[in-house]
Length: 444
Image (tube, rainbow, N blue to C red):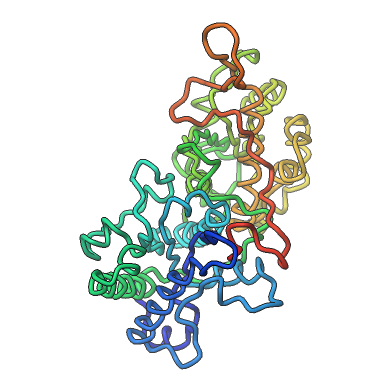
């Protein structure tokens, strides 16, 4: 939906955030290799100012060189990513190897996911730019899924990227055309996507949208334990339910989509490929001694415990040793029925699933106690997913290389698509340096 002139006049947020990987200096005291990125940024800002009615002093765009000395570095990045209209990742091999660039991508992508969840329509507000061409097979899932026609900016742009065009004078016209077309696309997407400001992401806990290095999309199972509108407890409001358990929408009316769909989108933003199933129809007896096939998130509606048969099966599930399954209990604080029955249903869940309620680290226990809003669900799910992935890696089958002695560590393999199972465990959090000292790829 295109913004009205009145809305645009009152909106002075940056049109774009330029996300790029810092190139290290070739030698001490040598020229700044990122000065060419800064030139691109200035050229884009000039075009955006000419194409819009932004007033004098309003920022057309943002790059991290705009941060003044003494400002909180990670806080400033988080604030701009929570307010800018369009995210412009500058593709290069170094970009997708950068954890910090992955964090920036993730922070912006959450806003698009919430926008889609609230309005039930997609919001594509990422406009990629080619700095150095990257072969398609080297793109991580979030970048590979972007539907973007780079050839609209010129054939030379596709083969050489903006770096090649800006460095060679013979391509000056091609550079000017590519930058102009990119600026036009930024303005058009900003006006049509209409993504509003969001809550800043805490960079010290933010994951990278690209996942661990060297791997494709990682499988994840999302299982929903909830009733349908046809088998609700007496008096329960049917507005939160659908014809299948997967249709459960605990955050109605703030969220227009089922919580399983929200979890699937959030998992995809972490380079996971989620499969959504129902606890009632798709859970089969499992040999507890058998290795897992993938990590799993179990979404539990406390109202589901009012059914005796389902409660018995959840209790049996809890008694099995499945540490690679993390439990999340979405719980809408604005749902008056749920709030009135909270004490009773919470006690019933604690009696039914005592193992899962006390299992794992702080984030996992908090998720099992109840997640009160859509935004809180988005904040805690990455931590819960990574905890489940860690436990999966610890319990998956290990197949040592065939034939005698070996010097390398054995690789984990399981009957699943992709190359998810590796010997590199996923850390609980992604630490970044204090504000006084940016991470390595953020130093010039």
